[in-house]
Image 1 (tube, rainbow, N blue to C red):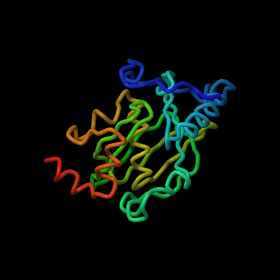
Image 2: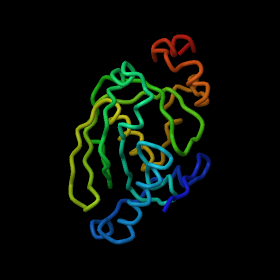
Image 3: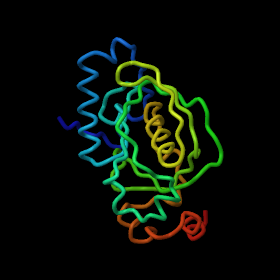
Length: 195
């Protein structure tokens, strides 16, 4: 079942989500929610979806970066972004326990801010401790685009959206991002926009 993705301006996106207890995670309701979120993320299509984005204030997100989503991205951009496929998984009650320099900047979009993108600085590497869909502890070491996805989804669970972190002068419609910046390095985009 596809869920409705709420959009920026809805106050639910600005509220910190509630942690889940292990017995809740294993419940039929949460297991069904995970499956519905997975279907919704894939249908959108997106690489991550947090429960607050579907109007549910729980610390739960689904993540998957499928190879088919990268087919129209130039190989040099994939390499620059350190973007590789990430298998489907669930993060529950996640905490970023380590952030590593450098800070890297790329365009980012969001399923709750449809039609827009902006350059967002994020840590290149993170360590995340969380629970998986069975309630088992998990430690994730991530770098590149995967680290960006994790930071973006964890922000949602804390009531933040990428627009809170973006370089405001880079905000653009997705159409204009493709039209004007698709083949331009981030350094050149920032320079041309006076950032």
